[in-house]
Image (cartoon, rainbow, N blue to C red; front, top):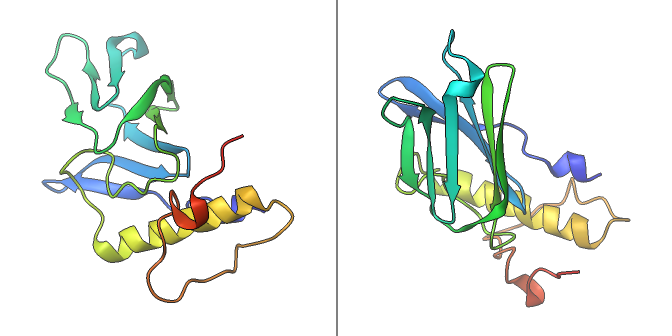
Length: 158
């Protein structure tokens, strides 16, 4: 049932008419997907994930991305992989349930409506995680959605 509450589609960050990256999020993590340029060997790519900063690119060239993150991440459980000409970066949220409006500080922010939809989806993921025998995939909120991190005493930790 939890897969019904997974992100339906990725958000795209477009700059000067070019797609820079796509991204999505869950309660625990933010995923960034970057299409890699052709004819560059995989060992030439690098990605440095810091608590509040992300840098990536091709060795010997200026970074493709070199930006602060909007929220801190757990560096020991964040990672990146290359597969099918896509760099997939998984950032483990330090504050589980926090809704990110963008994975890059000040760049490609979701509009307020899309941010609210993300927050509602994350709240339903939280309900599903805390009540695995129930199906929340058709649940709806009327009005503003509460913050998944703090609603009813906050997210339970095991």
